[in-house]
Image (cartoon, rainbow, N blue to C red; front, top):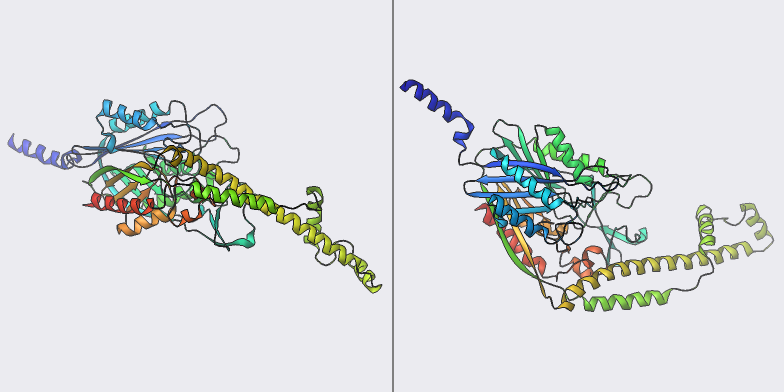
Length: 499
């Protein structure tokens, strides 16, 4: 009998639950949040990851939506209402919950709040012992920085809302972040339970049929989940992608589609996932704090831009041509530079008879063309000014004009083993994310925007010298000092999580 008890004890000691009773547990789930009132290309989800170690429970939720409040269909009361329900039903502290929007522009279901709670409920129900590992992937093919630095030192951005500057004015482009931050969570038998992957890019490519879509990151998550199988859930966490577009965002000569871009991102993530070796008993640490950031007084810049707009409008002059005349004339003079008006022998004939009238006609037509083109470029500048002025006026109205001098933001941090994530509720531009990663000096420290709220764009202090020139600089409520305050606090948070 004693021998049997000894054998039983040894057997139990070899079981996973016995050696990991105080270790990390995880559960994952996803719930469909697609609005089907219209054409649907692919599904949108709320994906939840529950993590538990000892008395600490944390939840990470990735939602296929444009933002958590602020803009889009998820309103400002979503976060406090969901957190209150999770606290009441599951005892999860609001400070231990991170809600990240992928920033896809798909349309979520009216019941997204209830469905998000259900995803978390299922993730908690699915908690089981896991091993964890962190890694880094790389993807360079699917994105581009949308900021164009012009030869005059100013910056514009690549948007659907207005035209590109002339090619000969573009001097340089901004950086991208090719890093994919990856957290892998395996069941104790080695099968994958969940993958968290962090990458910086606006998922706004859509599909050719323009149906409702989770866009690039939706296709990436689908690729990862189908490849790993066994019910694995892939949670995309949007990074510092405020100034990063999908590649060829303004292409007009080929069909643009999110699906091949998502496949590439998914496969690059999988390549990193397969290199990660998971370990048991990973440390779980979660932290949340508030930070007051200064709002910008945009009134002086608004006045400057209105003066500039007036000057541009005054510079428009009457032209000899109209659009119907301009288009064929432009084509003719671009196709033939030597003899655009008649055959070349007629030019030779007229010159032989000392009649240079064809050359004079060409010179006049070229002047008319240049005058028309100058007006077009001026009107394009006015279009950019008008678009960005509307954004500046919106933020001035709700900010300084309303007596609001600061904005309170929630910063969160999550550590799972070697994987460390720090968050911000706005659209961080990529230099901010790169700065924090360099300063953190940890190979698996990553940065997420679009988390736990929405405070519009958050460009660098240097980029804010360009206020009104690009969307990131105009759709921003923050004063330039915000960057130093946030980057310092973010690095401190990473180091705190790693202690």
